[in-house]
Length: 364
Ligand code: NDP
Image (cartoon, rainbow, N blue to C red; front, side):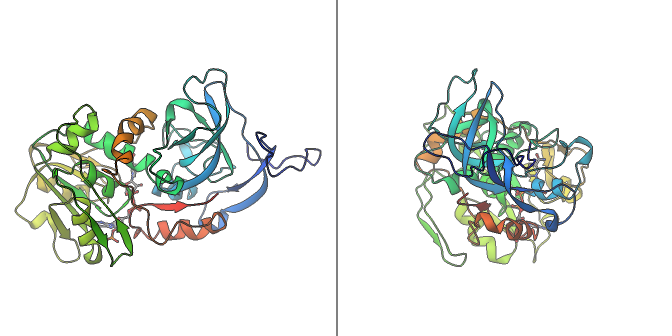
């Protein structure tokens, strides 16, 4: 899919209006390893689309820890064949639609997580490229209120937060502890649990973030996600000292500084614990009897359980009104967005494990 075009192919690298070139720029690796395996290919083949897919002209992409773990070869056994163009999260414009595509057309601005199963045969031709082919069902129209860079940071993380809460059976009145509240998944999990109905305006100067949050009214309960949003009796989350204020601004009632306190030694117990750090053994110590511990990474100790996210455009569609109104806000790490030429640097920043919200690549 990403092989260089043969020399007989027309050397087209930019599209004229309405035209899709034969080749594109794409980051790719043909061996597993550290960041040095990533190479920018100036003449990768633009992927073909299947009947149920659209071709997206990528405007922005975001990195997830799975991109780095996959590149390191951690999921070799179930990965698609090399060479790989990495990238799950995309925001961009539809430039071509397959025969069976019903709801999307050329010119639509879309976003989504392009691989239905994150670890089972994820796409060989990912989103860190000028074009990517995606099943219609994995995409949603991009909220008009969001730029491509903001939208690109949402899909995999918010789908994970949503699916985790669903699987935990989260519902009105329950309490939750989110381990890793300042990361991509945690920052969204806090927001979708936000129990407060007040409107807040917050600037977080320390992190050089300027965000305005407004929270959903209790009346709009049609959205499945909203059931979870409004009902939480208490949201607690962990982070290091400089990020505690961010946790609060995202809606956490309790911000636990993991550099000063062990959450497992505190008296509070929770109905649900969402572990986005890999602290499964400690997580089970703070769950109430009969509660749920959802583990995204690392050790799983009963009653904890792990799942792997499934991409689903309908989850994004359900979230869109909340994004349109600014009730749920994507959090783009202020070190970014990274330029397309800076993908190696973006990976290495992600791999520090210190990112605040999402590591975004934009423009592409
Ligand atoms: P991020 O890279 O966005 O997480 C970075 C954040 O983690 C930082 O803000 C950091 O805050 C925080 N952090 C690091 N160590 C700790 C700690 N000991 N306690 C509290 N916070 C900590 O990751 P994601 O949110 O995108 O993903 C989290 C994990 O979940 C990853 O391992 C990922 O692979 C996995 N995952 C699994 C999925 C699945 O389907 N099973 C889906 C999505 C993600 P600070 O600087 O304050 O330490």
